[in-house]
Length: 467
Image 1 (cartoon, rainbow, N blue to C red):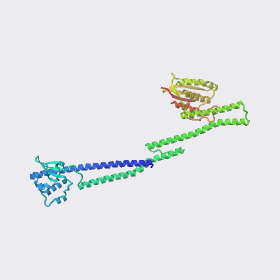
Image 2 (image 1 turned 135 degrees about the vertical axis):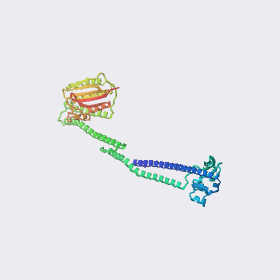
Image 3 (image 1 turned 60 degrees about the vertical axis):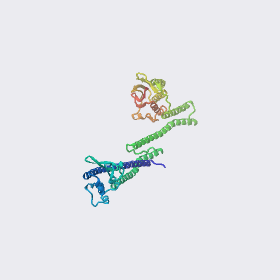
Image 4 (image 1 turned 90 degrees about the vertical axis):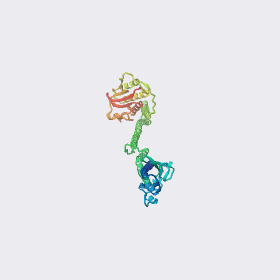
């Protein structure tokens, strides 16, 4: 049988409360029994002490126990109400004494006995003196006898029994009432506690069905409220991811459609005889294939960095020396485009990074290619290497054209271009900066875009130095 959380919670509350009530009932019953018996014991002891004084007065007045022993009615009256010291009661036999307040054998007087100085039983219950609790009777400092009482008597008098039973019943009904209240409140309380979980469950099914707009109301500051807020954050992240995925697919299709369309148009033109199949036409086809290959390669590199599948073989590297090598390798290409490329090293001494030199070189080349594609002829790229707070800083500053302020934060998004109509023959697929961001973050650094002091774009990089 499958029990829901609501039923489990209800049963837990019910069992826990029942155990508490049972323990409380048992403890209260035990406490009452012991407390009430102790009270009766102290009361009996007080009466025994009074009777000891009365018997001492009788012995002083009569000089012996003979008068008391010869008049049994007087003894029973003394046991019943302490009036035996006034002499025999006329017209009062044992029957009358029992009806007039004398208690039965199980009461106070039924458990008392009068003993002489030698501890021989003279009157009252005949039991072994060794079982009695003895209270001495003294007259003028001389021991004349004892009052013996059976200790530890259970509840026996009718009034005491009725009182004890009344208390037990009261305890029982209180416990029963608490149990009923617990059952009455536990079910609504279980429903109240489980209701947020049911909402989260329903919203989870919505997410599983692909409806990422599902949200749950986040109420309260407890764990259930935290769960609702965490669920909403998850749903929002999934919604953004799904939106990015759809945009990603649309952008990929758009990026691949253009070179493929050009290839198709050129080939159809050659097939129809509109364009002759000559080296110039084939060169155009080759250029389109190269652009298509570049897009596919960029997509592959980006997917590898996104998945973390790109291998990083990190070792101690001098990043500035590596940068100088890449600058020298790219200088000819910059020169052909009419651009100046230079490195300004402001470091007081060489620094070491724990990095993958191949990936750092890929980062440098991506950023230089980005400048090479979009910087106006006659401009320059100045790379400044420095150090700040134990981190290497690299600033790739180029000249005009610049980037609007509102576009700086979007430059590292996939396929983003400041100008949608930018010539694809010169520009890339808009993936280079996204790949660069992944490489920097894989090395524990950060990258951001800023306005360049030279009038163009500044790509600022910070990388942690090796300890």
